[in-house]
Length: 113
Image (cartoon, rainbow, N blue to C red; front, side):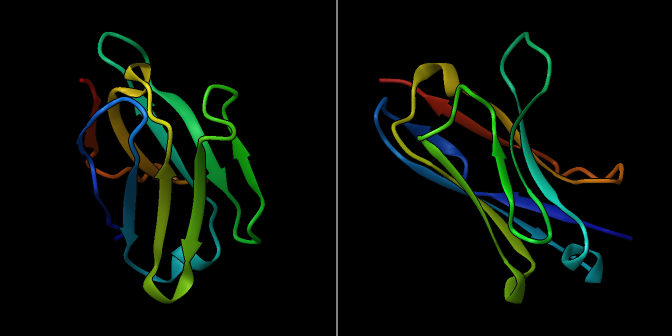
């Protein structure tokens, strides 16, 4: 069974930075793409960024130039570096193993002064 464990969320002021981590169990991490989604309060879950097993990345227009997704195979971990954070980035962030139904438990990110 695949497990995805997120960490790194918290409260940050506008303009600040956070780095989210998602540690995945199992060898499947090496052959699947990974993605970060978020669900703002009262809204639907949306794709933020994705990365393939080959390292190709894709971003939502709202985060391009501010967020960076990366993966570290040695640690079975995918990261989301979030810079220049805005209040509208406030959401619960989830990682997902693409091509499967596996999700992490979510981590809260709050951007507020």
